[in-house]
Length: 607
Image (cartoon, rainbow, N blue to C red; front, side, top):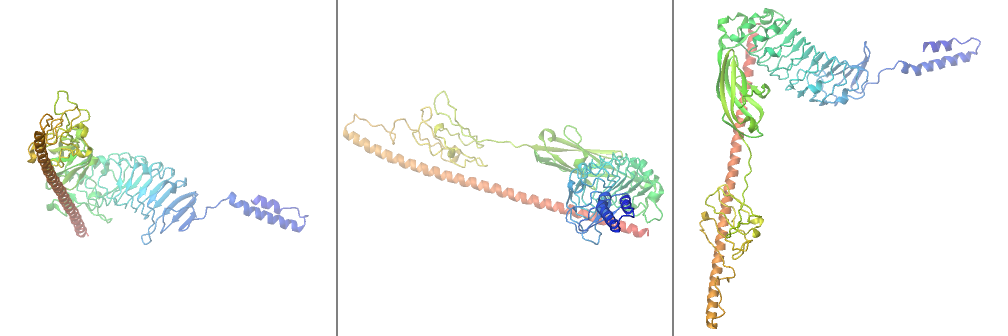
């Protein structure tokens, strides 16, 4: 641009004066037009954001407070983005961090999002941020962090997810970022490290303070060959395995303050660590102080003699069981475990296979098997639990019964009453649980849906087994007579209403060869017999109807009783469960209060 201006300015002086002025104006206009193209400036920052150039190129963007969602329209060449309201300011509200929010920032090297109420991170949200060196998600509400959430961060050096209370970390969450050097996962409620750090050989700083860790296994730190700084303060640690000594001894800084250490024989090795870790002088750090047993409370472990630090053998005092569970439901077995130090607990299926440790949960004095979906072919049988504590062991067995759902059908057998060749086509069979109920034989051609009986839980038929469509004198499908009987257990006996084919309503034959008088007398007799039989049939019908009503009422009463008992049982189970839950919460709070008081006493003691 300077060459253009100079060429126009240095025109021959012989030209008219106004030509020189016009040339200068054109040069200035060209500069104003071409300057944004040759030297572009960053796009304007959106509302609630500020943007400034950095010494290494790109822009530094800072937004907040009071953001609702990730800000749009940020400069694509941003080198750092910070969405971090101060503690005195209103927090942001970004419940879900989407891939579309950050995928355009290909040159981003640092991303800080604090106090923004993030609850969820979409899979592959950072996949395009291959130049990102630092990711700070501190003080949010992230519920879970998995491997898919951190994919693509091939250059990441620092990760901070502290103060996300209750955040669950998958065991392979950090598998794709082995180059990480600084990891801060403090105050998230972590209770087990497991093998989540096994591939992080480049890690130099690890901050685990303020979690719920109650025991530290050496295998959890074995791969951290370059670790220099470790903060374990403010946990529930009562012991550290001796196989962690090689890693801890090589550290430059180790903070073990504010833990309820149990000074037993398994903890004596800690005195072999550098004294600056166990009994530091100055620097605002506290020494390692015994919490248990009570006779050693508030004593500096450095001053406790070896013979005073004793152990007790592993034992299983009791287990819930025998356990009965439906197939598909969750199996839960809890055992009261004793031992000092607290034992390692191993669970074995009936076939001898050990279950994975990620389906167990341990407290200060119990171990519970959880997260197993019952499968009869695998889990039905005798389970074994084994506990190991400092060269002592104990075992116990628990019977687990896995129930499967079976369908029992009720049918009515319908066969002809006579004849050697039975016709079973189109028939239905009902099996009653009451041996006193006789099978009913009726014509298959007259069976209607309303005639299929239901058997009450007590074994009594809810409805009469004889369908209303069967009438005296009807025939079966093979032309034989249909025999209709009633259950012998109902008190009616066998009220047979067999009819001879071709007989009249009264059951008597008429004789055409008799004289008129005989015919008249027989007719009168037949009428009387017919009336009598009709009355008997009506009485039988009324009696049967009354019996049906009684049976129906009895069945209804039985059903109501069963429903009432089920409701009462469910209510009792709910009340007991809620009570046990409340007691558990109370005990946990009480223990934490005791630990807090002891820490305060310890702090007062060494001031």
